[in-house]
Every structure is written in C-alpha cells, then in structure tokens.
Length: 223
Image 1 (cartoon, rainbow, N blue to C red):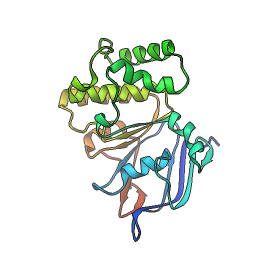
Image 2 (cartoon, helix red, strand yellow):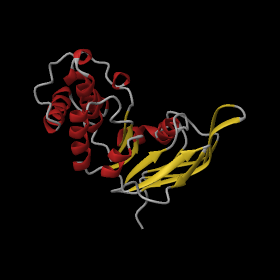
Image 3 (cartoon, one colour):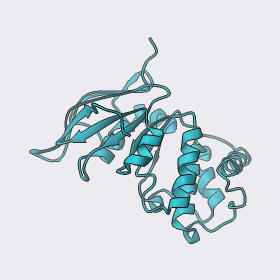
C-alpha cells in the first residue's frame, strides 16, 4: 500500500494552558485527494496547516509526512519544500520588490542557480497567464493579481501538496473563477480552507470538519 502524503495521529495543541485548539486530532491525505477543511472561524484550521509543515509543534501526537515521521526542525525542511502553503493574506507571502524576484525566491532557496530560478519563475508565471508580470512592482498589484502571484511563488517550488488557506478571500467573481479553473487543472493533492461551499464543491473530493478541537470526517460531500 502506498504511504499517505500526510498522516497525523493524536495531535494535541494549545496556545494557552487549559484552552486546547486541537484534541487528539487525526488526519490522512493521499495522492490525488483534494480535501476541504471546514469549521468556524478560530477553530484552528490554519494552526493545523502550520503543524503539518513544522511551523508549530504539537504537545502530543505524531506528524508523518511523505512516509517519514517528522519531529525536529531539520525533519521539516524537506516537508516545507514539498508542501506549499498559500497564505490567507497575500502580503504575508510577497516581500520582494518585483514579481519575478518573489517567484524566483523559492527555487533559489532550493539550490537552483539564478538563471535556473529565473527560468522557473518565468515559466510558472506564463502558466498562470501572468507572462508580462515579471518586472511589475509587487506591492502595486491589485488584490487578485497578488493572489495569483502568491500562488506562483508556491507552484515555482514544484510541491507535491498544496495547503490553501482561504484562497478566494477578498477576490472578485472574475478572479475567483480564474483561480478556481487554475486549481482544478493542477495535479497536486490539496487541503483547502474556505467558507465558500460552492467553491469547495467544485474542487474537493471529500471534506473534514474542525470544531471544538476535534477533527472529524464529514458525513456527506459538499454540494
């Protein structure tokens, strides 16, 4: 049997003593899945993403990613190269002066030469219909343009898994439709946090709910 991309077992986490965010949470993501992660605001959905890639560490439980149990910071370096997070706020993801520099940053960190990283960045932007954006000043882009460039920074890393945190947040209808089409055509497994049930129904293969610290499989597919 093929190992899952992610398997979380018995995960517990709290920011403050006596106020658990996650209680004995378990989750599995297999290749080809697109999982909707739903639940009320403040339930800990983003926290779960951060635990999956080692930005936060649980007080109990096991994080297994790509067939290996991950504990120490060094264990998660590979995970963060193979599982890309699209942050809810694009401004948290974009920090270089130009679009091309932002998109090339990840490949450079993976050891690509400047020429290789620039080539990957240009090809990624082209694939998203942003071919003329390389020299644009990032902070002058519209919200929708920033969201697409932020996605480009993730895809340029060529990850196996996409962790998408409210990807349609504050997008107009046209940009949301464009983003939905792009995501639907991608081969990567995904976990998607969103409140838009229509959007999730178009992309997800199953749904899990986080509420009160407990993560449970949804009893019915979103529709």
